[in-house]
Image (cartoon, rainbow, N blue to C red; front, top):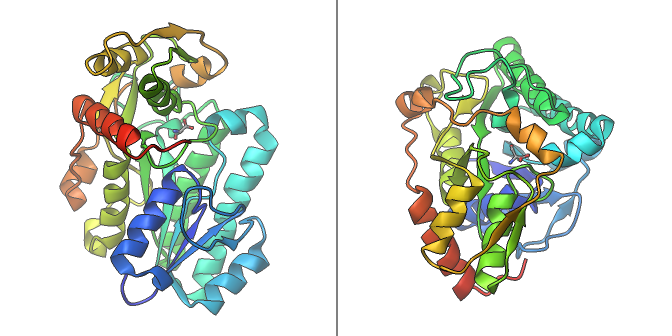
Length: 316
Ligand code: SER
């Protein structure tokens, strides 16, 4: 990624904020173009304002900067898309279609698509979702992620566009707030805990979901994008796993640091979304193809989150 500039869409979102900072540190500030529909809240860069559904605007940025690599993170998350499904389809699919078409025509070298555990549905083995198996999501977000994966694979097969993708689990980080996801509770809960306040969880206590610490998610993203093409044998989204826990287990892990921490449960519409997703995913293809390895488990993640939220005084 040193030989051509990098474009990040959704650079000011939950993952985009940390990915952009990491890419800028690694490859140089001016080498990475941070684009988003809104200016940065937590990033310290100048944002190129871009609505990814505007193909002409995207094309102009890619050609002006001679972009070689695109990390396309602009999207609506599951809960937001479920409340406005037509908008979810429009932003997630029109945006991705535009990225693929612009990338193909402008000769972009590699493109990253963020897929999700939301590709799975009620026909998947919830105990361990396989890499290759039925993808029958019931949410609009999941529909756009399955469609997006298949479209990316199509561009690889048909045009040789080097599209790569992972299926992110719920992502937990101290650096940026999540927005509109079903797994957001696992970030929100830490902010309440360090303030010494109780937390009311919008998922039930026993809702087990796959999760990953932000540092691992960013490393997975960059490692996949830097892997030699022959190692990338799967051109739909790779399953990647790190840990899997319930809200009650996370609360217990936090109580090792704050013994008086109180959690109440008031499940809302997001419970149904979570119930359609698997508890764990089988990521052996990512591990054997390009060497994926997670570093943070529940205890290590909990300790690191709390240490950062206390010392960085991040007010999200
Ligand atoms: N974290 C995402 C969400 O909850 C899942 O991809 O929407």
